[in-house]
Amino acid sequence: MEYDGGIVLFDPALFCAFLEKANCTSGNVFELFKTRPDIGDAAISEGAIIPMYPIDEDDYRFIDLGRIPSAVEWAFTHTGFPLKIQSGLLVATDLFSLFGWEHEFFKNYKENFDRKAAVNDMIDVEPGMYSVDISGGRDGGGKIYGLRFNPVSQLKPFGEDVDIDSFDFNI
Image (cartoon, rainbow, N blue to C red; front, side, top):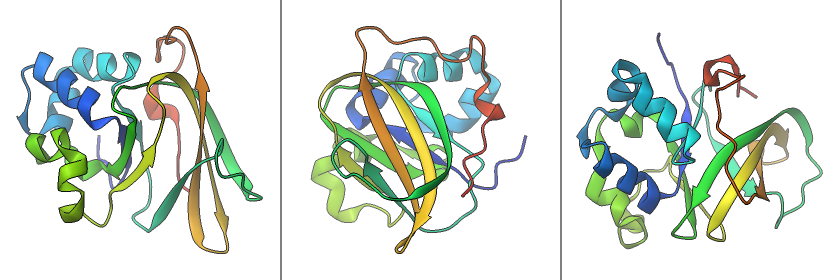
Protein backbone atom coordinates (compact mmCIF):
# COMPACT_ATOMS: atom_id res chain seq x y z
CA MET A 1 0.00 0.00 0.00
CA GLU A 2 1.33 3.45 -0.88
CA TYR A 3 1.05 6.41 1.49
CA ASP A 4 1.49 9.82 -0.10
CA GLY A 5 1.22 11.67 3.16
CA GLY A 6 -0.02 11.49 6.67
CA ILE A 7 0.43 12.56 10.26
CA VAL A 8 1.01 10.58 13.42
CA LEU A 9 -0.01 11.65 16.92
CA PHE A 10 1.75 10.29 19.99
CA ASP A 11 3.14 11.01 23.43
CA PRO A 12 6.87 10.88 22.68
CA ALA A 13 7.85 9.25 26.01
CA LEU A 14 5.14 6.60 25.75
CA PHE A 15 5.74 5.83 22.06
CA CYS A 16 9.50 5.55 22.63
CA ALA A 17 8.86 3.11 25.50
CA PHE A 18 6.54 1.08 23.24
CA LEU A 19 9.24 0.92 20.55
CA GLU A 20 11.87 -0.09 23.10
CA LYS A 21 9.62 -2.93 24.24
CA ALA A 22 9.24 -3.97 20.56
CA ASN A 23 13.04 -3.79 20.05
CA CYS A 24 12.72 -1.11 17.37
CA THR A 25 14.51 2.10 18.27
CA SER A 26 15.94 2.93 14.85
CA GLY A 27 15.27 2.47 11.17
CA ASN A 28 11.94 2.37 9.44
CA VAL A 29 9.24 1.99 12.10
CA PHE A 30 6.50 2.29 9.49
CA GLU A 31 7.94 -0.70 7.59
CA LEU A 32 7.97 -2.66 10.85
CA PHE A 33 4.28 -1.88 11.32
CA LYS A 34 3.56 -3.06 7.75
CA THR A 35 5.56 -6.29 8.00
CA ARG A 36 4.48 -7.00 11.57
CA PRO A 37 0.87 -5.79 11.69
CA ASP A 38 0.54 -7.29 15.17
CA ILE A 39 3.00 -4.66 16.43
CA GLY A 40 1.33 -1.84 14.49
CA ASP A 41 -2.12 -2.90 15.69
CA ALA A 42 -0.85 -3.10 19.28
CA ALA A 43 0.63 0.42 19.02
CA ILE A 44 -2.78 1.75 18.00
CA SER A 45 -4.87 -0.37 20.39
CA GLU A 46 -2.62 0.41 23.37
CA GLY A 47 -2.94 4.14 22.68
CA ALA A 48 0.74 4.61 21.80
CA ILE A 49 0.06 6.21 18.40
CA ILE A 50 -2.76 7.53 16.22
CA PRO A 51 -1.97 7.40 12.49
CA MET A 52 -3.84 9.84 10.25
CA TYR A 53 -3.65 9.08 6.53
CA PRO A 54 -4.15 9.74 3.73
CA ILE A 55 -3.50 13.45 4.03
CA ASP A 56 -2.40 15.69 1.20
CA GLU A 57 0.88 17.44 1.87
CA ASP A 58 0.11 20.92 3.16
CA ASP A 59 0.34 23.09 6.28
CA TYR A 60 -1.97 22.14 9.12
CA ARG A 61 -2.70 23.40 12.61
CA PHE A 62 -3.81 21.29 15.55
CA ILE A 63 -5.95 22.59 18.38
CA ASP A 64 -7.31 21.08 21.58
CA LEU A 65 -11.07 21.70 21.29
CA GLY A 66 -11.44 21.41 25.06
CA ARG A 67 -9.18 24.45 25.54
CA ILE A 68 -9.69 26.42 22.34
CA PRO A 69 -13.28 26.38 21.11
CA SER A 70 -13.57 26.81 17.39
CA ALA A 71 -16.29 28.09 15.09
CA VAL A 72 -14.97 25.97 12.23
CA GLU A 73 -17.49 24.17 10.07
CA TRP A 74 -15.95 20.71 10.29
CA ALA A 75 -15.73 18.65 7.09
CA PHE A 76 -15.52 15.42 9.11
CA THR A 77 -15.24 14.03 12.62
CA HIS A 78 -13.79 10.58 13.34
CA THR A 79 -14.26 9.30 16.88
CA GLY A 80 -12.95 6.76 19.35
CA PHE A 81 -9.18 6.69 18.86
CA PRO A 82 -7.45 5.28 21.96
CA LEU A 83 -4.60 7.40 23.32
CA LYS A 84 -2.44 7.35 26.43
CA ILE A 85 -0.60 10.44 27.59
CA GLN A 86 2.18 9.93 30.10
CA SER A 87 4.48 12.94 29.67
CA GLY A 88 1.78 15.61 29.34
CA LEU A 89 2.76 16.17 25.73
CA LEU A 90 1.21 15.16 22.42
CA VAL A 91 3.32 15.42 19.27
CA ALA A 92 1.81 15.72 15.80
CA THR A 93 4.40 15.02 13.13
CA ASP A 94 4.66 13.93 9.53
CA LEU A 95 4.18 10.21 8.90
CA PHE A 96 7.62 10.22 7.30
CA SER A 97 9.13 10.65 10.78
CA LEU A 98 8.48 6.92 11.17
CA PHE A 99 10.49 6.11 8.02
CA GLY A 100 13.76 7.36 9.52
CA TRP A 101 12.94 7.15 13.21
CA GLU A 102 15.10 9.35 15.46
CA HIS A 103 14.55 7.67 18.80
CA GLU A 104 16.76 9.90 20.97
CA PHE A 105 15.29 13.04 19.39
CA PHE A 106 11.71 12.04 20.27
CA LYS A 107 12.66 10.47 23.60
CA ASN A 108 13.94 13.91 24.65
CA TYR A 109 11.48 15.92 22.59
CA LYS A 110 11.13 18.98 24.83
CA GLU A 111 14.91 19.36 25.10
CA ASN A 112 15.23 18.96 21.31
CA PHE A 113 12.23 21.13 20.41
CA ASP A 114 14.37 23.97 19.03
CA ARG A 115 15.70 21.66 16.30
CA LYS A 116 12.34 20.11 15.41
CA ALA A 117 11.14 19.85 11.85
CA ALA A 118 8.65 22.43 10.63
CA VAL A 119 6.05 19.67 10.31
CA ASN A 120 6.09 18.93 14.05
CA ASP A 121 3.45 20.39 16.32
CA MET A 122 2.98 19.95 20.05
CA ILE A 123 -0.02 20.16 22.39
CA ASP A 124 0.03 19.99 26.18
CA VAL A 125 -2.38 17.27 27.37
CA GLU A 126 -2.94 16.11 30.94
CA PRO A 127 -1.56 12.62 31.58
CA GLY A 128 -4.25 9.97 31.33
CA MET A 129 -6.18 7.72 28.98
CA TYR A 130 -8.42 9.15 26.30
CA SER A 131 -10.83 8.39 23.54
CA VAL A 132 -9.89 11.02 20.95
CA ASP A 133 -12.22 12.60 18.41
CA ILE A 134 -10.52 14.15 15.38
CA SER A 135 -12.28 16.81 13.30
CA GLY A 136 -10.94 18.39 10.14
CA GLY A 137 -11.91 21.66 8.51
CA ARG A 138 -10.81 25.09 7.40
CA ASP A 139 -10.81 28.49 9.04
CA GLY A 140 -9.32 31.84 8.07
CA GLY A 141 -5.84 30.51 8.87
CA GLY A 142 -6.05 27.43 6.61
CA LYS A 143 -6.48 23.75 7.30
CA ILE A 144 -7.09 22.79 10.90
CA TYR A 145 -7.52 19.62 12.93
CA GLY A 146 -9.50 19.83 16.14
CA LEU A 147 -8.78 17.21 18.78
CA ARG A 148 -11.21 16.41 21.58
CA PHE A 149 -9.66 14.42 24.44
CA ASN A 150 -12.41 12.44 26.20
CA PRO A 151 -11.05 10.92 29.45
CA VAL A 152 -11.72 7.20 29.89
CA SER A 153 -10.93 4.75 32.68
CA GLN A 154 -10.00 2.03 30.19
CA LEU A 155 -8.96 2.18 26.53
CA LYS A 156 -11.35 0.61 24.06
CA PRO A 157 -9.31 -1.55 21.68
CA PHE A 158 -9.28 -0.05 18.22
CA GLY A 159 -9.70 -2.10 15.09
CA GLU A 160 -12.01 -4.78 16.40
CA ASP A 161 -14.84 -3.41 14.30
CA VAL A 162 -12.99 -0.70 12.33
CA ASP A 163 -9.83 -0.70 10.22
CA ILE A 164 -7.57 2.37 10.54
CA ASP A 165 -7.10 2.27 6.75
CA SER A 166 -10.82 2.95 6.26
CA PHE A 167 -10.54 6.60 7.40
CA ASP A 168 -9.86 9.60 5.18
CA PHE A 169 -8.36 12.59 6.99
CA ASN A 170 -8.07 14.88 3.96
CA ILE A 171 -9.59 18.31 4.33
